[in-house]
Amino acid sequence: MFGNLKAQPADKILALMVEFKADPRTDKIDLGVGVYRNAEGITPVMRAVKSAEKRIWETQESKSYTGLAGDSAYTQALSALILGDAVAPGQIAAVATPGGTGAVRQAFELVRMANPDARVFVSNPTWPNHLSILKYLGMETIAYRYFDEESRAVDFAGMMADLAQVRAGDIVLLHGCCHNPTGANLNLTEWQAVVDHLNATGAIPMIDIAYQGFGDGLEADAAGTRLVASSCPEVLIAASCSKNFGVYRERTGLLMAVVHETAQQALTQETLAYLNRQNYSFPPDHGARVVATILNDEALRADWQAELEDTRLSMLSLRQKLADELQTLTGSDRFGFLAQHRGMFSRLGASPEQVQAMKTKHGIYMVGDSRMNIAGLNAATVPLLARAIVDSGV
Ligand code: PLP
Ligand code: TYF
Image (tube, rainbow, N blue to C red; front, side, top):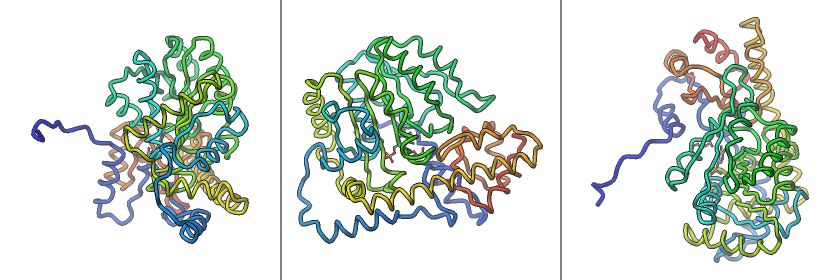
C-alpha cells in the first residue's frame, strides 16, 4: 500500500524555513515564513496570553470534552471582535477550528457539500495553501487578477474584469486585510464595488482574515469584512488567532457562516458541527480558551490591544525605514509602495534570479515570488536589505 503513494509537492514557505535553518552564516536574515518577530528576533508569548494561561491553570477544574463547535464563550467573543455589530448574532453560525487553516478547509468542505458545482475564485496570487487545499478537495478554482506587478498595488480594474465571469453560487475568496503574499489591499470604495458586483450576480463571498490588527488597526482591518457581512445575504469567514494573539502552535481558528434567513442558522450551525465531527471531532480548546479569557476581561483585553498595537506600529515603522532607505539609495520613489502596503508581507517585485542572488550573496531569505516578511527586519538589517535590493538590480 505505502508503495503506491506519490510524493506531494512541498510547501515552498516551509521548505525555505528548513533551508534557512541549515545555512551556517551568522549574519543571515530570515524574511520567509509569516511569523511575527520583535526587534530581538523573538516571537514572544504576548503578556495577556501568559496572564490568561496562568488564570486558566489556576481555575480550570476539568479538561473534559467541550462541544463540537468549541466553547461558545470563544466563538461569540471572536465573532464580535471580527464583526462588531455588523450582523445580528442570530444570523451567525460559528465553530472553533484548528487554526485559520482548519477554518479554510471546513469552509471549502461546506461549499462542496452545499453546492458541488460551485467554482472558487481566488486572487492571483494568494496564500499557497488556499490552492493546495482546493486542489486536494477537487474543487474547480479560477484565479482573478489582483496585483499589478508594475505599481505593486491592487489591479482593481483587472480584478473586476475577471470577476465579471462569476455565476450565482460561485465563491469569491477575499483576504480580509493584509493580503498574503502581496501586502496590497482593497480600499473601502473598492470593497463596496465588489459587494455590489457579488450581490448583482449572486456569487458568495468567503473572507480569510488572518491578520486583524496588523494593518491599520483592529477596527479598520475588519471594515471590509464587516461591510461584506452586513451587505451580502450569505458569507463565509475563516479567521485565525495565530498572528494577532501570537498563539501559532495552539491552532486557534474560527469558521463563521453569516446566514440571510435566521431560519437557516440552526441548519448551518449543525452542519458546521457535523463537519468538525467528521474531520477531528472536538476542536482544540486551549488557545480558544486563552483568547476568550482575554477578550472577556477588560484589563487583559486592554493589555492585549496595547501589545498588538505596538506590534503593528513596529512593522509600519520598519516599512517606512526601508522605503526611506531605498529612496536615498536610488534617488527615486520606486519603492514607496513598501510604506503603502500593510501587514507582515510585501511583494518586492524581484525576479526569481534576484531573489536567489540575495540569498546566496547576502544571506537574505525571502519567498521565491519575492514576498518578504517585514517583521523579520530590525533597525540594523533594514540598510543591509536595502543595499542588497539595489545590488541585485531589483
Ligand atoms: N490564511 C492566511 C492568508 C494566512 O496567511 C494564514 C497563515 O498564517 C492562515 C490563513 C492560517 O493560519 P493558521 O492556520 O496558522 O491559523
Ligand atoms: O504565509 C505564511 O508564511 C504563514 C505561515 O503551510 C504558514 O501563513 C506558511 C505555510 C503554511 C502554513 C502557515
